[in-house]
Amino acid sequence: MPVRRTQKPSADRILEAAEEVFAEHGYGEVSLRQLMAAAGVSTTAFYARFDSKEAVMAALTARLFGELYAAAPGVLDRARDLDSGIEVGVDLLCERFAPRKALVKLVLGETGSIREAVEARRRAYGLLAGFLAGRFATLVERKRIVVEDPDALAWALVGALEIQFTRWALWDDIDLPTLRVQLRAAARAILPAETRSR
Image (cartoon, rainbow, N blue to C red; front, side, top):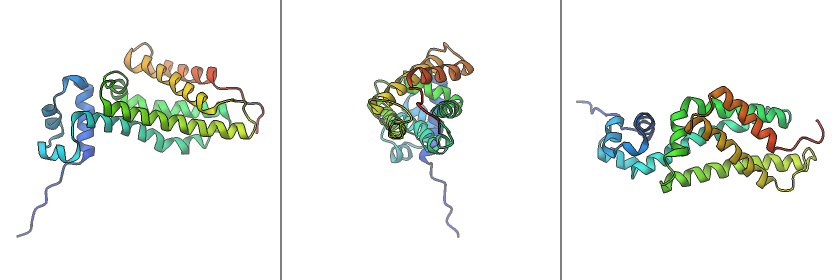
């Protein structure tokens, strides 16, 4: 008689269920039992993959930003200059975050007291700032822009973009088309003009 193998619940399945249930009810309102039920996993299966609800939220945060970072180099490599870099960068951010507005709202609004999620967000912002600082440093070396501190410029841009996403996802002050306009305007207000074209 052949042995039947049952499909083991994956971490991805738990994360997908968590994103849905957290979006519907809010992170703080979802119990660990509700999360396990939504994912269709046993306690043992859940704990084999995550040690807490907080760890799930941290993984969701890391996955949200990880998907962005995976796509960023290929997209930004198509930029011809700083202005087109702003255009493709904003398009990438909106393309990745717009369908996941509820998760963006959770990351920005409900997870500030969750140590693991804060750390995941800190790492994600650090990676983004580091990536941008590297791009800016290259432009400085090529004498395309004049910037005293590429790292500080990168962090200023990350902060400016975050407040626009907060206005959109958390406060509902602006809609998606306005978000795109505001992200571009914020980037152009912060970034220096190029000193020469290619």
